[in-house]
Image 1 (cartoon, rainbow, N blue to C red):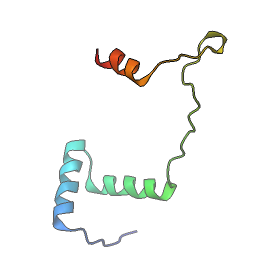
Image 2 (tube, one colour; image 1 turned 180 degrees about the vertical axis):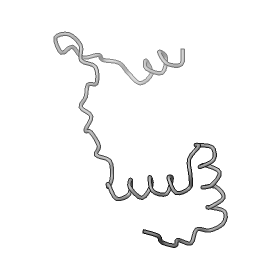
Image 3 (tube, helix red, strand yellow; image 1 turned 90 degrees about the vertical axis):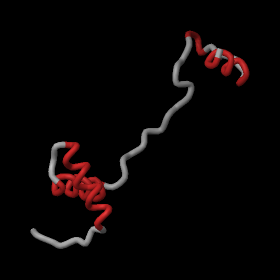
Length: 73
């Protein structure tokens, strides 16, 4: 099916440049984005803590200052 969509010139120039850099057509980008929109939001996976479990469910007691010292030196 054909349709007409008015895209502001600055947006179209950016779209065309992106297509050229990606090695695809403007049509391919538009169809990809439309399909993503129609699929709906991506499902999020709930994160459970702790991310890393120690042996025997040990907990690491560490302060924010100690974390800063480890990361920043």
